[in-house]
Image 1 (cartoon, one colour):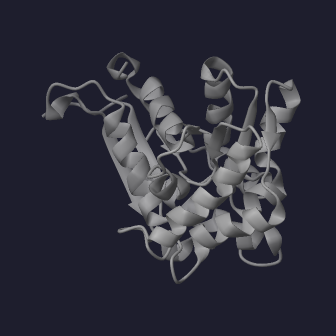
Image 2 (image 1 turned 180 degrees about the horizontal axis):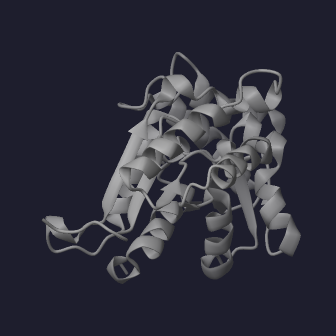
Length: 255
């Protein structure tokens, strides 16, 4: 039997939403240079959506149940299962009102894991790889309201984060949340109306001269990746996947 002592393993907090967790897991494996099954890192994902309340709703209504409770439950289970490096594939969950409590939970309980931050990793990646100094942020209402992206990008003045106007933000939120065609309700297959909403907003922003877009909600790449437009898409989920491989088995990172 092979020893697993001191072996690094990736943990994914799934369920925010479920397909976002699957998308991160797929992109983790896509980021590995492998010649056989055994070349891939250990990955543990636990998806318990029923325990994790909507992040945007909580940010807008902080008197309601904090989704950190469910996130903390999953983190503990992942650590118990052997995960050493954990990622939460949800941009909105990294708002300080949620993430500060999650980190406090890890510290108080002495959970020996490294928790990666999807927004921080995106910021680092863009500083190293992005030539454009302006980027349009597509995100949930909670992510915009919490200013979590601005908290990283504004500090060093490297990038100017641009937001669509309110009407166009509503099109983005509908593409994510609409029960009739939104990605959370219709993750596979994606409804054409969700893709069309992103196309409408992007055409407007492109006409204003913006060519770089941060897909700042982990559901967005599921739809926006299907656009065929002359734009540069920044995918925080892919960046997070690569950061996980760098942390766990850097020698296996696909070039």
